[in-house]
Length: 280
Image 1 (spheres, one colour):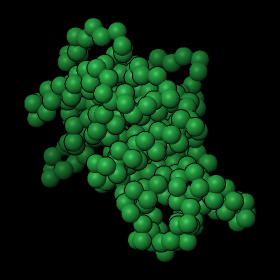
Image 2: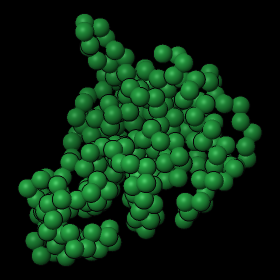
Image 3: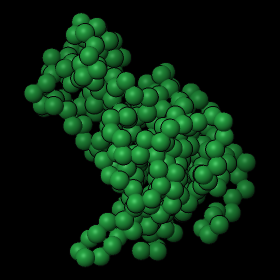
Image 4: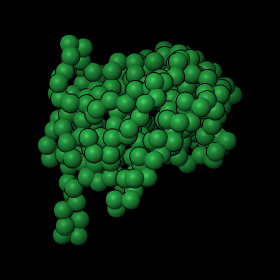
């Protein structure tokens, strides 16, 4: 395959991009052969080209690609907000292309409702699902305590730091009844120190509950630290260059980022993306 790295590291495995063959265990989320173009200034812009990915139950999967490669467009298609020109979205073995309300979604910005307190923001998914107020608040308090937000239940979003707002937004996504969580560069607006703290916190929360996660990120180290699988996207029109199974054991400790095998894999992905940028 063109652009495939000639790697011999036994510490990790690089696979061919997912084909459209399927085993007996259905992925919790699957995009099959997605194609998408847009009209822009009387020209057609081909954004996604025969792109396929899978998220297995309880798996943390990340997508890395050059800026403008169509990662957010893919999320809009998965969420039913944008229709693909070709291809389909499947969840638990059934086609759901174009259907909305089937995933929990956390955008780049916290998007908390400013007129609702932290508690009221976090419990919103349970409220919309019809859970009784008392039961929802009891469950919300447990999550707030787990997130280190105790004492801020009645605070409004504008009074919180960026990291605290992101924690509240993540808790709201966790309170969703949907199994699949889609995270769209959730830490991109945070400073480096806060971002590192949030990565550690997210890793602890995820390893305890093992929700199925699909995350977009530009941050290679973040993807390797958090993920079981990393998909590397090409430049537009985007397809999957590589599917990389991350080899590092769980629970994954932060010091793994200094391990030589981690640094080698990080470098290889960086070189792959650098080659893609040269094509523009």
